[in-house]
Length: 343
Image (cartoon, rainbow, N blue to C red):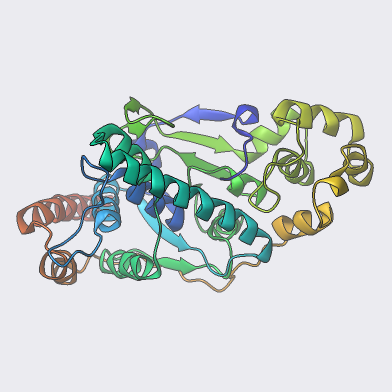
């Protein structure tokens, strides 16, 4: 779900080349869900190997990672840890929606409606634990660092940007800004195409960067007020926010109350909508647990391990896999030669 504050953000279109040699922390769960949702067959079913094991997530992860690496980007994948208790309600909401979509998918199959089949199948997406393990195995084989967050991956990635260990967070959600990510990259695709929300078609998109300090300055709030703004419009921890309050009205309230958060939440009658304090959500977002002793080390891809994983184990086309890896090898060798030349 994420927090709906996009209309208030300061964003700027960039080129992928602008991110060359910059370390980027990617919200792994966010991107894996994207692949499972979009990489499907005509009838909406997921890609599988000869044993029926799902491979859509591995297909997307391999293709996108290798192509971005081939353009000189330094990727780091951050994985979610333990889900906060307050997020369990959101998970239940999503589970219910998936069940409803699964029923509609069955109805679409009976009606032989391919468009509806693909639409509702995408809404049943689940990221299973074994898929996460498979993704980690592939990321390691690609020579990319993995950071296991104790809780929310976006909070971990945001901490890494504040610590100047990575240049930006990569995610399609906006939660990273509430967690204090100094820079967030959206639409980091390899084809400049993105599936349109609520439709089966794709549109042209450019990567864009959202600066936290620019956003705070432009809308005239501080970091704590931004968190409060998120609570008003709704987060994964207080679904739906305060009824009738969107981003613009939330901003007006902040201008009126400043940092008198108690007065603000009393006026909007928080206690009538939620059986927990606004302070509980505020403190969770502000103090989300993060790992501080992570290690970021980029290595050369293990070609043989990648081949064993994708080709031998999951039936990927060997020629396609090796072709992409050859392109990556050429780029890395050219970059290494350039670095030695400069030295």
